Amino acid sequence: MSKTKYTPRGYQTHILEQVGEKEGTPLLLELDCGLGKRFITHQLVAKKYPNTRIIIIVHSSSSLAETIDYLMGEYGGLEDELGELSSRVPSGRRPRILQEKRVIVATPQVLAGMYKKDPSLLEPFEMVIINEVDTLIRRTSNRTAVVFPWPTLLMYLEGKWLIGMSGTLRDDHAVFNDEQVEIRRELDTLKQFLPGAELITMDDLYDTDVEEYLEPTFLTVSTVNDPKIRTISQVIDELIRNTRTDIMNELAEDDNLHLVDGDSRRVHLMLEKLPITEELKGRYTGLLMLRKYVYAMPPKTFLRMFHGDYLTHYFNVSELRRILPNISSKTTRVLKIALKYKKTVVLTSYLEMVSQTKDVLEKAGLKVLTITGETRDKGDVLKTFREDNEVQVLVMSPVGERDLDIPQAEVMVVCDTINTSKTMYQKFKRTRGGLVMLLAYSGTSEIRKVNRLMTRILDRYPWSTSIVESQSEHLG
Image (cartoon, rainbow, N blue to C red; front, top):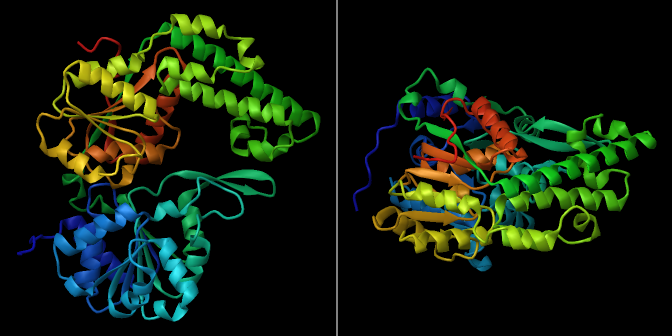
């Protein structure tokens, strides 16, 4: 089979030259989604360092399979030199693969396990490429800032040339120090664990041709008007504010305000560690989850969470059950949007919303596919959505967003958002540019949350995101 002939783009050549100039120095490479991190990896292992023994560490089994397929199939040049170290390889065969293959693609858990059994197996390898290096970092870290098994794995890899790659190196995470919480840049933590690491960021590529290949993502808020949801959310917002005030007062009484540095926004980050009553902790956590359910679930589903004396004091649940509709207003909005486009991707956090969206859209005559954590043939479903012109909508729960590329979609509809800007940005980029509509209930705290998220994304990823005018109830 003849392999694809490919001339590196200018920015890719620049990156490869920079890597060559910094040979032996730990590197952190930021390269946005769709700009060819796998191609850079291929060029390093097959062209630039064809005689070097290299380990490529990927964050998941699905990413491993795709990386193997890419390195073997897309451009070639590795053939018999490539080996795989993952849970799908029998443990008895793993030592021989490490001994016989020049380039190994591995998951961190299996690699750490192999080192523990026989450290000498890793000695001949000189270079380690860490794919999606930002996944090393804990969102909220307690004893260690990096996830298992990286604390020990990084020790095992000491002395080797480490190159970490990621599409995003610009987020924050929470680190607990001496009972306080510190909001720290992920990049600072990565540099701590890769001492002496030098950076190659998107900012360094502006003098190249990179802008020719950037696929802009246009973000817009699509406000959903639902007076009943608005009323419910306003009551929950008030209860959350009151509970947070109670927490701050309890901290102040015992002279413990320093634990949150006087900042009530840090309460949720330190909640488990705070010296306050369990009742307050449980109430605060429960209210935050309840608000999330109200914004993200069908009404009859989230009403199941309205129980206990505290909530029934503020809500007449039987009356709510009577007046709330079965179909979420957001589901109705998704239908309106999907009818306007040939290919729509819908992201939603809960299986109940996936199911309701599929049912409503199919009743309207649309052909719909779904991907959830229960989907075994994820690749087949994606292939059908991409290639079958009759399939108009793909509805997904949060599963493997980093590993999915769906450029065929004309629009992505995000039914509910989370606060982590990097995670949301990675979801947005799965369609490789185009329009992303964020649904939010008008007149609620969800609007403020979505606007904060868009501002952070625009600030951190200015090269490929723009905000367009919000779309209201009437899509016209």
